[in-house]
Image 1: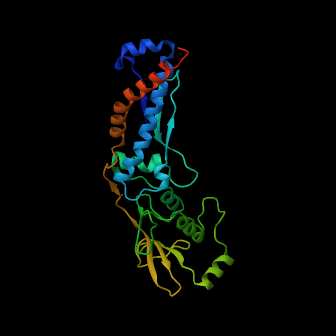
Image 2: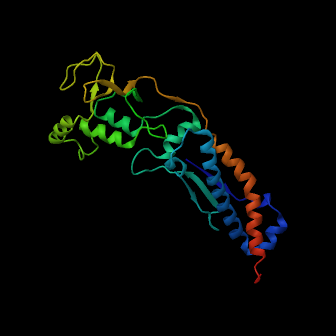
Length: 254
């Protein structure tokens, strides 16, 4: 997910362009890069305005690709890859376009191992404590996957010894409810608890952590990033080009 800033000489003062001569490509490329950096700086302000407690990861999840004299193109965008979790370019896309959000990496894993159905989504429930940003703590995902023994590679899955030790210490335990209509296959059993992931505390009390719902979460297009980026480029590119050109024209060796 990205936007580009390009240079059109007709939009600038022809006299200034002629004065630059062979330095025109460099002046233009530098102005394009500065403009993309302006978009990045403003992007943080837009996020703080429209999002509820955005994380530092979200605020810093963009990049700038510098323009060169050859490409005459600067790019600003959101990162499409991440070592852990969902890349910003994917989860912000729903906020920009609106509509149904796609499955998260966590949900895809639950679907892959048969805990959740393809049309379902895992929604936070009563027993889930969100972090200061209103999000699910990443450590909780790993903890649940480990206890359910469904880690991506099998590494980190909880052993029987660890399971017994945690049970003796009174640590909360997680389990899956497949609902009252679940078939009796393997370890799957029907239960009166709604479909989802539940927690049993040291006293035996049971609370839902995630419930599985069939209605996809729907988002409004609150982050009109493309429009704001375009407006910033239109406002800043002429200013940045003049500044870049002035720095060149003030050189004593010209």
